[in-house]
Length: 294
Image (cartoon, rainbow, N blue to C red):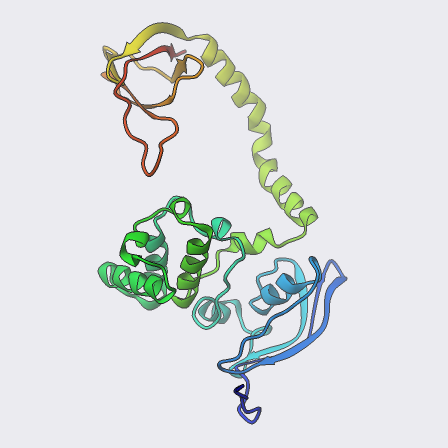
């Protein structure tokens, strides 16, 4: 038995004669469709046929694109709204879930934090309330042990779990970062952007390279052993501009360094943790420590 949605009810989204072009070159032409409450619509086409461009254009997330036609959402034309008005729509009324969650999730934030942060921003929730709702949203997507998964980092979840976390972000009125819109641009446009961003710092590049080379050559090297994976050296108030730690090939450890004008501290942790957070190394680690100063 199938359910038919009455066409007498105005659609939530009505797209008419959508056109998108870059630099005058058309990439999407004459797309029209309507979407009613409760409906699901799939855009099907070959790779590069314009599916993502069509979706991104509705929220005007294509930098440098020329967009024509109309896209009425509850009577408001998304293609003519001011940028300020459109920001209230993005993430609140329309959310986008990307195909590859590892490029959309922040690898330096826990899953629950990413969802809760959006809830605080969009709905004005307090920290505890936002965290509690983030767990509820994860549970609503079918993720087992949602409270535990909220504490996880993106790399600790499976691909399917990350997709579900993205769905929770969408339900929570996820604000689309501009970075993911930029990823959808043609390679030539992104290359031009990168060249433009790098250009202001290129004059300082060679000077910085020479400075670092001179600094590295000024180093004084010590052969040392970190007993139980830890080492401390008093610096006697002398400043050091650069520290270099060298390990024997095959050493399964990486150094963590901290220093002030009184002491230099080196702690070694596991280079390849089996699971979760890397643990401190408890074995003796031979290494060389180079003090570089002008």
